[in-house]
Image 1 (cartoon, rainbow, N blue to C red):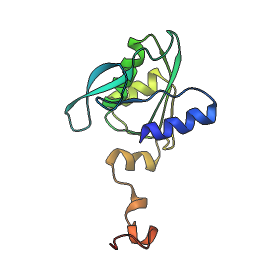
Image 2 (cartoon, one colour; image 1 turned 120 degrees about the vertical axis):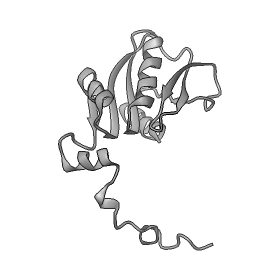
Image 3 (cartoon, one colour; image 1 turned 135 degrees about the vertical axis):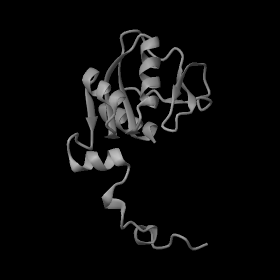
Image 4 (tube, rainbow, N blue to C red; image 1 turned 30 degrees about the vertical axis):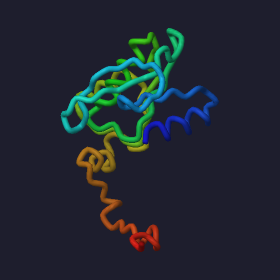
Length: 145
C-alpha cells in the first residue's frame, strides 16, 4: 500500500512518483536488491533503472515500517543510483534498532508519534482501537453473497 500513499503525496507536492516494488512487479528494466522481510525471508526489491539523475532527493513512503527490511532495500536502491534520501514517511514506524537508525539518520515523519501509547500499541502490533471492529458494522452488506 505504500505506493498508493506515495502517489498521493507526490501528486499533492507536485513532484514525480517512482514506485519501488517487490521483485517482478515492474514492467521495465530494473535495479534489484535483496532484503529480509518481517518474517525473516529473503525477498527482492526493484526500482526502475535509470530512475533519476544523480543527486536527486527522494522521499520514501510506506504504510508501516515494521522491521525496516523493506525500507533498507529502498534506501540501498536510491543510493546505488546516486540519489539522496530526503526523508521517510509512514503511517507507523515500529521501534527497533534498525528503525531507530532511520530516525537518527533521516528525517522521519509518522502519524504515530514516538513515545506515545499509540507507538507502544504499534510495536506490539495490537491496536486497541480495532478490538471492537466488525466488518458488518463498517460495511453493512459485507458477508452476504
